[in-house]
Amino acid sequence: MKLIIAIIQPQKLEAVKEALTEVDVFRLTVVDVQGFGRQKGHTELYRGHEFSVNLLRKVQLQIAVNDDFVERTVNAIIKGGRTGDTGQIGDGKIFVIPMDDCVRIRTGERGSEAV
Image (tube, rainbow, N blue to C red):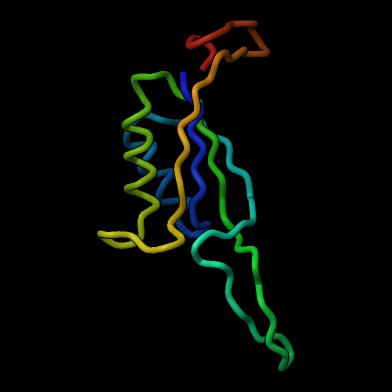
């Protein structure tokens, strides 16, 4: 089992959800987050004053999958989250983390059956 954490642009969320649905991944958690990487923020104008915005709004997806779903999930996120054919700085990151256990609260099932 793996926990896939993806950080993407908010406007790409619907495209990523559609791409995940195409590969039979239906369960995910979405969290609004802020951060910066190579983009390093940007400047904005508010009431005639220029100011720097260091933290950019992003969306974090958390998806628990069995091992046989890892590659198709990662590929779906890339397909839906990439800007254009080659991508751009700020498209995001995907982290694949080993997951030791999972417990379904309702039934008490554990492991891959609970995912």
